[in-house]
Length: 475
Length: 121
Image 1 (tube, rainbow over the protein chains, first blue to last red):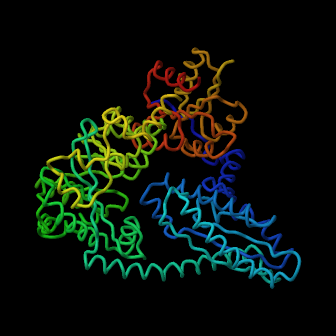
Image 2: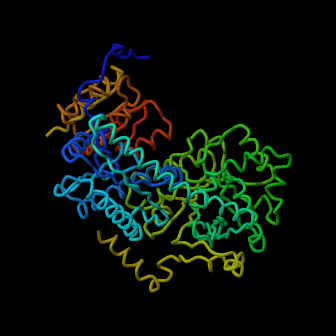
Image 3: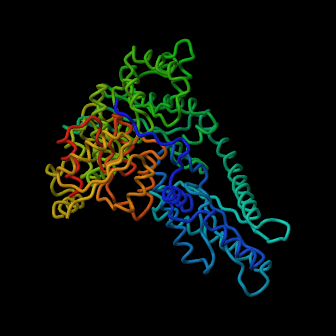
């Protein structure tokens, strides 16, 4: 072993390092906005000069869910979009001297500080302008959201609140500012809680009545486009409070009803698929807690399949590690009991950074699902190609086949197929379908339920695809 | 003009061997024994490429990578991670954090030079 250079124990990082560290705290690199601490001196100055400052507070409720569900890259991109929208809002609606800041580096809370207009008494002018600004901000965010910014995330909601900060001689201005931010935060949270309570009631009703709708998205071989199976995707329709599947599952997670919701979805998925599944595989998203809960029961397999009609050998449990596994040993034991009966296992969202190599190796999955975020534009992204190669290496190591999720463009498909990826799934190949739309075709004519056919097979039917291809080859 | 490479590793033997190899191959080389010194040299030496060890005292390679990336002045300098850790997860994480490539110790002279010449074009 070579001798190491030991730094003396009392050595401090140099000024350069400290300065670089400080910079990362004074500016939120994700939203490109300054942080509150960096601008505190300006706000204090305004407070002392004008006697009052208005605050519009804006945040994304359950922002951490975005990261938990889609990964930190998605979260970062989302917050970058939000930062850009807020900067644009500031240019349009704010006056010189007003400020938009992030509460802290990496924060999901943003603050708009507005000075009272210099003419007139500030106490009379500010509240009115604050409410107007608040409404303008809410509308502005909604317009941008519907225009497809925020990674096209249409369900996202924003919470806003206003507060006024009035200078007084007995308190430090900085503490007044922090107290106002806290107060705005609390009133925004209180508003959100009322909304969440309503959503929870709805969720319980959905579970009890099994009011979930299951769609089936084909998973196909990238070599010959034969169908391997279907991923069951559940949504709840008919309730305005719960928009979309993401929200449904995030909510269930929050109120600890994931296992119950999983069960309702499983029952619905089986009830329909057993008529036509044949030799196909049925991929079921399964919360690790569902497995853990089943493990505590005497006859876990019976519970898993009591709603029957689909043989265990046709079922693939898609495990995501986005919610943590409480007891890995019991979890694996239960999983192995299922596998003894022919149940297969897939690791969802591989490459998104949730499951470590060790965890994946221990689970010995039959399939690795390569994360959708990494498939996006993989044909133009060397790092994503590099990650794919890494996941493929891992697949070979643990003897698992790769399924690429969320394929949307010809370029992505060519790159993935060219890299030797076994299976794929995505809008380009086939959209999720109702069971009754699959039934007439499957298993007899798998190709019929695919939207995709190779461009050289049908050269005239996909002008927009051809157009894009030509562009690619030219550049 | 000679390309400049900054070699950052807390093991002196690694610094010597790598520096020697790179100098033989026609690069101008400086080295740092820790992340703190590296950040200083990034500004004085202005390297075209940084070879960065991950496990170092005081300021580790992850933080160096993060600080370089978050600063517009240094965000474009390619960083090649040089480490004994062979975990796939580390490799993925390094690439996601903006590293240009990843070399696992022990590595051969040829591998080192090929990877570097591919990036320091």
